[in-house]
Length: 506
Image 1 (cartoon, rainbow, N blue to C red):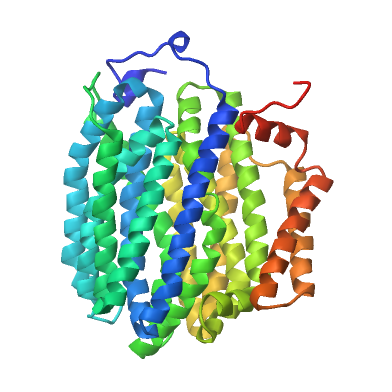
Image 2: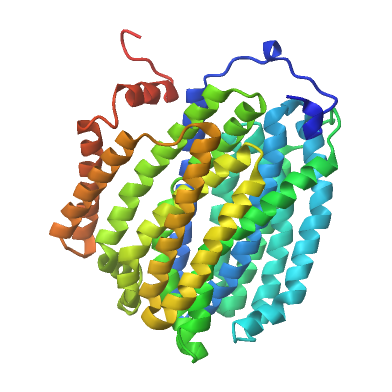
């Protein structure tokens, strides 16, 4: 393929000049690094949402959840879209990484500043649409986070494109720590919702400074087309906006439609936010895999290595589904126990929704993996179309189900929409790349998950005993996958390579 098409006109990297890399070891270790960082992010996020309901009352927690939820849609659009833009161009020709970084920073000063400024100005209108003018000031605090993220994402994308996953993970660890400490600390000092959101802003500024120091500055080589960067990023931004709206539209519609009383609606939003904090772990558990897969698939499709691309796709989908199936079963089979253990009895109002929505988040995770594959290969416009279709179905379903069935209705609507969206994305990936997941693997994983659910269903316990049952279910699931051959010699050999060891005889 011609590098000029991607704005990498001055640097030609020859295959012979590039040292061969053990991709299994690189991908495996990268996944472990980022998975550890994401697990820590989830644990600190869980700790934050565990403490905040005890520092804030239910109404304040609902307001914080709404303000953070809307901001998260915009922030995730900015940071993920920018990371993918920078990573794609850096992964294709690392020699121009510095030039890509500098050009991207120039773009982000304009684009990130424009998005943050627009969000700041539109805050009163968004608050009005949610029937609560108090949200205006909270939204405006988070506009600063958006601008900070737009710059931070450039440095994060540079590390991802260079496949320096250990450094990327280190930044994630740092950010998670800063956010937990600052959000909880300022809220506990008596500043309530304003303090919690200001703590988030302070954490984003701190990690931005750290990322500048970690990535550093070198002399740029080559030329990069701002037009090509902007073209790819603008489409990815739309796609990520749609994806993140999919994660929040149910919460927003609960606030708008669950009750005409704004205080009761805020309480319902708080209950549902607690449910989704648990259920979202299902798809968040595979984010590390997509971070590693993105630059690898981007590089292989750029070099037209069809067989390599198909291998990356099948492994990414298979391992993602394997992980998400277990988590969805664990959360669904212990809905009441988890809510009572993590929160308070008041939040048991969301137990019925938690029995359903983890499977919706499994389907969302599958959709996220498939659209990441499509985007990394240079077709973000296809991901946009699939995402928009899913969002329309999700919004329509929530609009119909929530007034009739409340939180359970939202869980049903989300699951149905994500299921249809993942089916469409699967058809496209199979048609375009000739790879997905073998029917044999799908059946094996499904059977193992079903039997694991039965173990939890037959042992309904709470408190610390529930932790033991959860561990037992995980062991049963892993044992079943080994017994039926889904985890075999190839997987064990890959583990040894990732760990830097070889078995005797190899």
